[in-house]
Amino acid sequence: MNDNVKQAEHPPSTGPMVTPRSPRLAFDGETYALTADQYWRAITDWAAVSSADDGVPIYLHVPFCPVRCGGCTRIAEITHSIPAIDNYLDLLEREMGIVTSRIGRGREVSQLYIGGGTPNFLTNNQLIRLTDSIDRHFAIGRDAERTIEINPYRASYNQLQLLRGLGYTNLQFELRELLRGDMAGIDRSCSPDLLNDVFSNARALGFRTIAVDITYGSVKRQTDDLLSELECLLDLAPDRVLCHSAQSSFAETADERVNSTHQLTHAQKLSMFVSMLAVFEERGYEWVGVSGFAKPQDPWCQAQREGRLFRNWIGYTTERAFSVLGFGLGAVSELPGLIAQNSDDLRAWSARIAEGLPPVAKGVELSELKSRERQLLGLLSANLNTEEPKAMDIAIVEELKESGVVEASDGRVMLTPFGRAFFSQVHDWDRNHRLIAG
Image 1 (cartoon, rainbow, N blue to C red):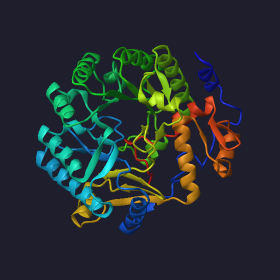
Image 2: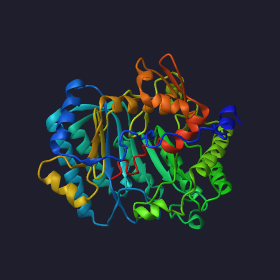
Image 3: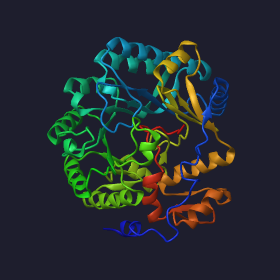
């Protein structure tokens, strides 16, 4: 075990920091209903300062699933109706058209992410329709990562072949349990043999990256079980692994979330994460940012070593792009001065689009200071340090220093080993959770 892990086990006496100014400070729990005018003002300002060929990340949310998994934290719609999904795809294209009518069609995309729900629940024809809709409104950059979330139980060889033919380069698997899903009670288990077959097919078809999301921190799972599953997963050699601490289910009430018996305490989650670090290190993976792991030759690792790794709402990226355009039910757009979330009610979302309006529901306008703080924290969570001429003028730096999370001098701010492990718990912009609390 290296020095970073040893130090992370023993936080400084100042204790966990920054309440209420947590690293998710862009919101501070003060979201409010947004108007179309506020959204248009922000997106028009963004379009004015970014040239038409500047790459922009885009996120599309496909909410449909055949069943709702236990402990689900996603914005999801349960249906088996092909017409209902077709209607959603019609509206999704109309939403893209509403936005591109203002910013211009054909803007280059540097990062494409299709999330859900279960995007590969769509039929082959629907996957083709979805991809064609994107291509009609945007120009996907030649080197852009094109990622789609995949449920391995639906990932046949023919479907993977289609997705590769449509240009998708990266597959993202959400994995709750690999060995003990039925016993852990989270209802999202997966057979290692099945996952191995899907990985083998994906590699044979030439996908660039196979990434896996894993969740830890449920009270029903012991550390030894989790580490056994992690060893089994790493035997399959995924290119990237993203680790997320357990969050409350959308199905839980506010009181149930506060008094949840399904989550460990912050300290217990941190201890579990530290144990996972040792396994990743022993298996030859490098720690990326605060929550990712990848092989040393991965572009993320190379970018981090060279100080050019970034993080936006979609995730880590080698492109310096802090803005994100979100489309679909509950999707988030991250614009200069504004974080906006679409309605997560399907009827309300559909009605707004039918009226020719952006389906934004709530969000928060960011002051210049808040925007600078958010950018600083994004850089820290990716590159672990940043040289910002005005960084020392930001009050959050002093708070983070007092808590042992960062060290700072002469405008250079660096995460401490404890701060890096601590950020893995609280600096969570996971696209699958409700980023904006209401």
